[in-house]
Length: 165
Image (cartoon, rainbow, N blue to C red; front, side, top):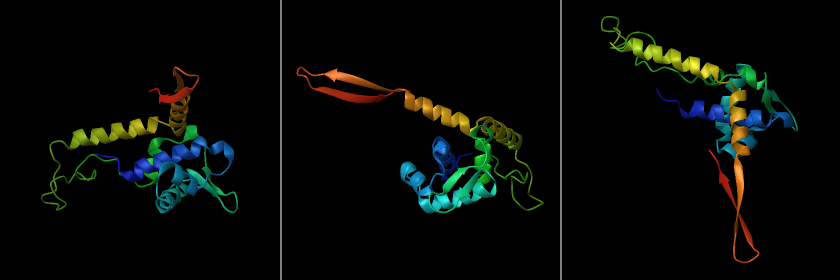
């Protein structure tokens, strides 16, 4: 199982939106520029997020998108499911016809339970991580940027920014 671009971009865009939530509606063009995601792709994703009542749109000058509920009430699973991202490691899409769609040959494979259990664990994990958790993690990361100075023999000081993980 692999998370596709759709799911990754949706989560990234939602983090960007939530980080700027306090400044009014956030434009998709702003998210597009900051996160290097196509504007038309974001429009598709946010249409789905709006239909699932995760975001709401504000029209007109100064318009954009805002969260429809607080970031601590939105999970990563909510976002991924809203944009139709499949969370499925089974070969059959959970239909238990791993060896073919035909009823006669459509039997479960020997590892079906393993992959079905993995699906449940993935959904549980993604449902345990909130958008607020990701926003807090991002803010913490930004606070861990340290400015170090290297003194040259002259009075010139060169500043270097180093990210701390």
